[in-house]
Length: 318
Ligand code: TXA
Ligand code: MG
Image (cartoon, rainbow, N blue to C red; front, side, top):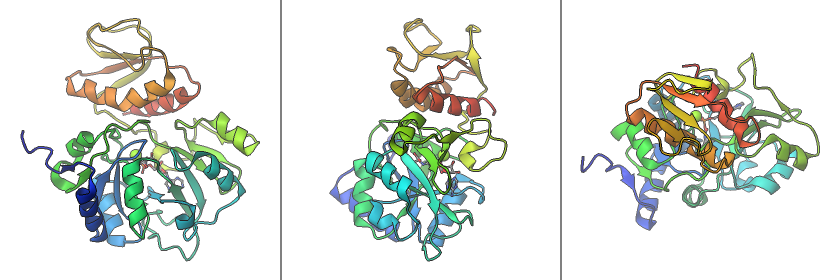
């Protein structure tokens, strides 16, 4: 077991240099963000992007999020607009991804954007990813560091367990504070939430001073994160459960069942933000403990609860 995590590197000057060298050479690396860990590669390099799709077994029709240090670096690749500026000022760097029109001259390879004329851009806040983005002269294409349709990783060991030694460098950034993927908002027309996250729709509406759209029962798949089957822990997940069946793992919010065997709370104090941050961690833990099925009690569909419900609904489709 001694060397099973030998591709995880502590965040220090030497390893930062090593990681940047590796990215410059076209390799892909595991990196922390404040939401979930990502699998990053040079967004201007066809070779790096192909590697990302291959290792994740991700369909080429699913576009990647492109990560930038700041607005100045993104402006080369996307058309910015008023709504973007307002949200950028308020939330960036932070857990929000914007869909914008891609500039025809953009160097982001068309494979990364799945041949679309739009681009998903994000400005992550985590100090490790910011230290990297500051020192490289290209943006990073970076999906969550999990196999396509599986659980997103929230610490470096999760990434290692997902890809084993196929990823040579995973830079450690401790446990992700937010623990659930960024809010994705399409700003190419009337603003629309494509994927709910920790930044709620209501707050975005307040900043934009207008109502925005969010359709949870989308028939047409506009982005892969909206695919019905996603975020799968690999065992059956049942949602809106009222009663423990006596043998499955039972996830809930609050402290009603204290530390009773088989019961897993997402937040003892009923804090939905904390609950969201514990979701993937708890699903992984349950799987590791060998349970065959997961029951989840009803989670209130407000604030971060909307993002939790979105993820568990998809997890239950597998
Ligand atoms: O928090 C996050 O966003 C994490 C960290 C690593 O930054 N990344 C992440 O990437 O969740 P990924 O690939 O797992 O999810 C990207 C989402 C997908 O739902 C994808 O469909 C959507 O962004 N997306 C990317 N480009 C798009 C585009 N041009 N139009 C619509 N949706 C797009
Ligand atoms: Mg993902």
